[in-house]
Image (cartoon, rainbow, N blue to C red; front, side):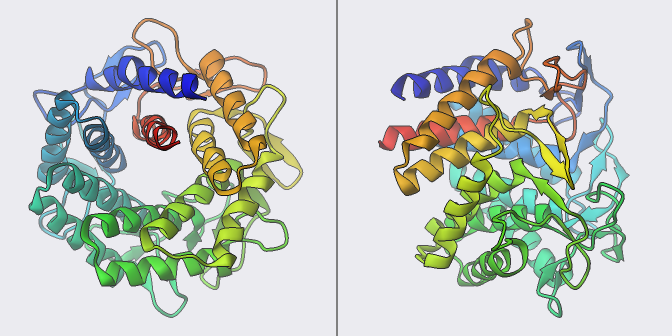
Amino acid sequence: MSSIRKQIEEHLYTHILPFWMKLKDKEHGGFFGKVNFDLTIDKEAEKGGIAASRFLWSFSAAYRITKKPEYLEYAHHAYQFLIEKVYDHEYRGLFWQVDFKGQPVEDQKHVYTQSFGIYALSEYYRATQHHEALEYAYEIFNLIENQGFDEKNNSYKEEFDRQWNEVPNDKLSENGVTADITTNTHLHVLEAYTNLLRASNSDKVRERLTNLIELFFEKIYNKETYYLDVFFDKDWNSLLNLKSFGHDIEASWLIDDSLKALNLDDERYNNMVINIAYNIANAILEDGSLVNEQHNEEIDYTRVWWVQAEAIVGFYNAYERTNDEKFLRIVEGLWNYINKNIVDRREGGEWYWSIEADGRPTERAIGEPWKTPYHNSRFCLEMMERMEEK
């Protein structure tokens, strides 16, 4: 496995991060919003609030872990754009989308976006000890808790207008339903609060993160099937028979990361983390990849880039938990699949969005508001840290 670690480290330094670094927008701030499938850069594409946060997290984490000064410069650049352009200084919180100059074009406030703001700002603070970043992270944390939390149902709400009036969750609903509660938003609030706890050691954050883990165990995790339900109404009734394999294995390691940050050893939660990983291992295909999702009996065999990246961390985390070498074999198979299929070997390429069931790369943008360095740089950084510890 030491050779895999070396390959992953080199891949981060020579392939992933250089691709995103060349997208630095020196004139308008942040990073160019779109790289087309043919690798041409659209310098006037919109820039997403989620994407801006993910750029900040990626370069902050890359600097914190590697101490390479060039990544710090890009983290400073990402921070400046997030605070000056994406943060709403009138009504607070992060916009959904701004134009290439940084003017809001979709001014909705989504809890999902806010969670990535916390995740990024707390990481920037961990990397730089810049206190203003931590203050902004706390401000968004308080916005989520005061505006975005439904005490009656013990759930996080989804979408709001600019002034923080609740609106239907159009941005994060799929498959023909409009969900009042989504696992995706709860997962990324949990991820954000974990990082904020590491940055601050706040008792309030600790209490809210502990509540989130209990929510996953009691409301989201299906104790009979070991899957996570995906979409819910306001009363936590599941709306679809949908299995999202990538989100489940991502949740397995992110929940475990929260347990570590809390120093919480609870057999119920430990078993949940392990059971999810064993369950999703059944969705690994012969070529080593992880399929995307299943709706009722219909399986989507698309191999999506972020699903493969998160699966490597999730299954390696399961190995660390269990010492079951089955998980190591899965990790090796996933890395081989990524190398052979997902990595875009064209000059100036990065990773394809996905590979179709027939083996062709999906002709979708290589960089856009939902595709940033976050998932695959994080997989590299996580594996570099975890495998070094062995």
